Length: 78
Image (cartoon, rainbow, N blue to C red; front, side):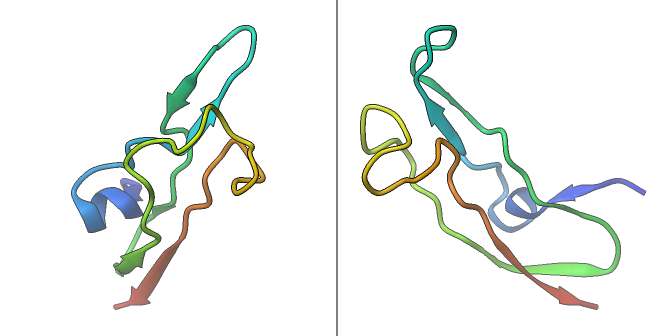
């Protein structure tokens, strides 16, 4: 069976980014690294809305305790 992504199923695309960090080896790194995969007779009812662009220099910051954004999905079993 093929795994499906909750965000792609619900929104038609993956999030613009889920990680935004600044390290010596990867300055201003901004990419989608986190996914919620599922398989089977399941419907994605909703996903947590994510920002379209970073709101600061890099994460973590005062409002983001991690360099990764929190992602979430609600499913319904069919």
